[in-house]
Length: 191
Image (tube, rainbow, N blue to C red; front, side):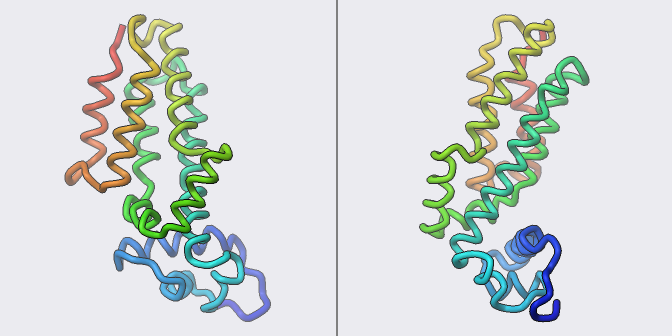
């Protein structure tokens, strides 16, 4: 436990990581469980966030921003590896989001509304990822690494829709990455 009045380095990330561990272990979140897991004073979450809903919304937005950053790295992969391998790596980053935390956020009306509002205001979300995938596949098409006739926009939407489904429902069997890899191979035609 940090002494009172002493700044805690990387507090946001510490609380976010603690929340993911609590959710994984307990299946629900409370402010007290999060701060105990993070080794912080009980009130620290409410000192830095306007309550549990605001905290959960910020956690979701942070994790989606990370996911969008991974998707934004796709242009650097054009011409390297294979398109299937590169999309599989992105799928791993997307599915690293804790589906239980995402689902929990939907049970908190304030958190869900804050996330929707942020996305409508331009915060990175699935739309950002979809545009990145489409742009990446078009660039690979220009290099002859994806079939010329491939509908890259539809492929991007299908992949994002699949990831959305898996994150929101926790479906996908014991290894959702296998399911996603199969879908990527089916959707991304080689030249």
